Length: 326
Image 1 (cartoon, rainbow, N blue to C red):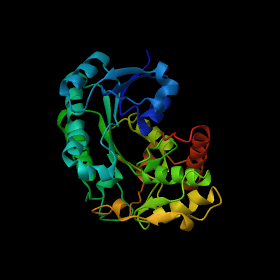
Image 2 (image 1 turned 30 degrees about the horizontal axis):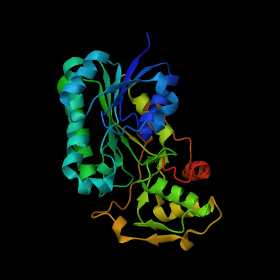
Image 3 (image 1 turned 90 degrees about the vertical axis):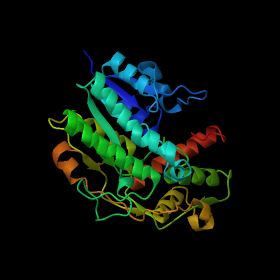
Image 4 (image 1 turned 45 degrees about the vertical axis):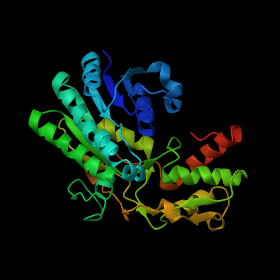
């Protein structure tokens, strides 16, 4: 019989790529979606007829228990969260409830009705925040600098706690920034590539941007979802950092993106205080040597190749439909 996987956040960037990956592996894929008046399925529209979509909400314990009980999944991937860092300052309580306590509700449902399932928690490099060592690895102390980062630390440690308390196969992947053509417009990489495409096509004349000196370790999302799966195929549950080990500034992001359309970013980019974080994370760069040694995982797409893919995709979208923002 085919393995059954339950994925929260399936309509997001990572969820859509993970669903594709698992379908290709022969899984029956169940995607948990919240009941709202405006559910957006654009990222999974091309595979929607191959998925089993079930209603559930990380804020509602009863819905999670029912989903786990009905599906009896072999693997669970908890990707759902309030995941946009700047929003977490405006909605700190909601962020904590969904991103932190939501993981607890998932683990409690798993422990209660499907303890045989293997569980993946989406941890984040934002947990390192004001970094205590460089590069950051699995043993680096956390020092989060946003309500989102704090909530992710809670989700990370409650996963460790349930693993050790109930002998569950529960792991956390500490993923550094990973982007793609499906990234939301609120994230800086996609904001840049989208505006580059608009400027090239004459649909916009400037790009307003925040801190140009912030440094991030950016990888390609399809590479990273493979790492999630690999973690759940191991003999023992362990946590892993997933990263490229290479860091880039936001200014370099502008350089690469504008070069894709033969333009100079200095003629179009405007720094705007509104996009500065209250507490900045200056430098994130990960050490994925454990994942390389134990999982056999390596990134396959470079930063420059990824940005080229994203700019090309945005140009194609906007040529077809100038109002397209997905």
